[in-house]
Length: 146
Picture 1 (cartoon, rainbow, N blue to C red):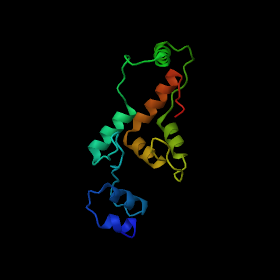
Picture 2: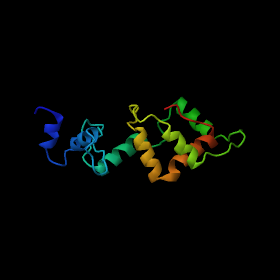
Picture 3: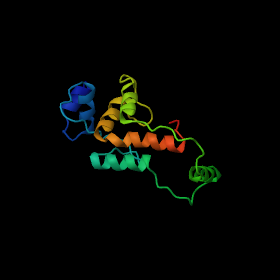
């Protein structure tokens, strides 16, 4: 093969790299389906269902108190303790949207692989999710660094 274009043009349409190439080349005509996540056993996901399952397993791990060390026990205790802060005014959808739109679309995504374009698309698809996440962080008085 001489190039990615040749490789992606000469493989089956189910090859997950075809979508990545078309997106990078600006030739994507329909919705991009990300199906190239690496799994724990060094394989790659093969469809939307396995990609979503991999994301859920990675970002929402099983929460069990059995394996908690001292740090995790302290965090659980702090999280369950009532906060003694004044009630802040909740974020509005418009404020969250404005903050997301201020992200630089040319900037590479971080460890979570979520670009500003993906975040805005998810925000527009699920209008209340981001706003509720930020408002819950505000209520708990905790905004994670990552």
